[in-house]
Length: 340
Ligand code: 13P
Image (cartoon, rainbow, N blue to C red; front, side, top):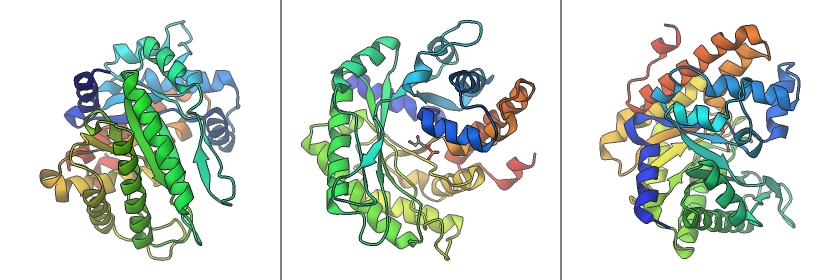
């Protein structure tokens, strides 16, 4: 492990007000999103869609790193150029999702544990050889009656820390993603309480597993009311609650926090990130960035719908969302950008 190299990569991932593009949906998740729009659920359709994304002109102006899944990192453009080369040529850092998905946690109905530690060292070595410089692992924490349990928080935090230590050993920056889900009717206060508890447990485990925090990126949820909670706070209230929670639980040594979008609309995700940077940027120890999948891709996917003739329009939509999110990092995003 070269700690300075890890620190440099982690800083580069959040430099110049850029952010990460998560395009690492598992095949089942990608297929589900395709099915809703009548797109064939085939390897070729997934390849064509990912080609659309990585060939979007100018994407590297706003996107520092792209997270791929195992299928995508091995694919090529129709003309045979490997995606890995297209991404490097765009000035974008290559990242890879290395978890094996969230499975039912035994003895804990409604809760999940992310698997994928077995054989991870060998997979990381292969991805590193393919050019990956960072990796991602997502843990999911559900909120509900009597959950999350201590068991689900601790098991997921320990797996995240063991994954992070192994990434650093292999020279890859770990993107540590503990996602407190939006599903349910819980309040923003409850989300804040659970998120703080989860983050404190994750950072304890990272310390126990000897993970230097300078060489990682945290990818958390924003602090939000549940999707079906009757009270939906305004953008500024979400920004305040999120930053307050992070200040309490995330050590200053972490170079960057890159939010997941988690099912928020693209516009809301940009507006909330913008509000955090407007209200707090000058007082924060870490960069507040983005690592969105749906909040960057969804409008483009809805335009594309599997049709070659829609590729350019879809790329324009993707470019626009990436631009809006860089503006949000600068506190310069506003609703007028959506109608321009
Ligand atoms: P969303 O932004 O769609 O939540 O996805 C982020 C991600 O990478 C989930 O692991």
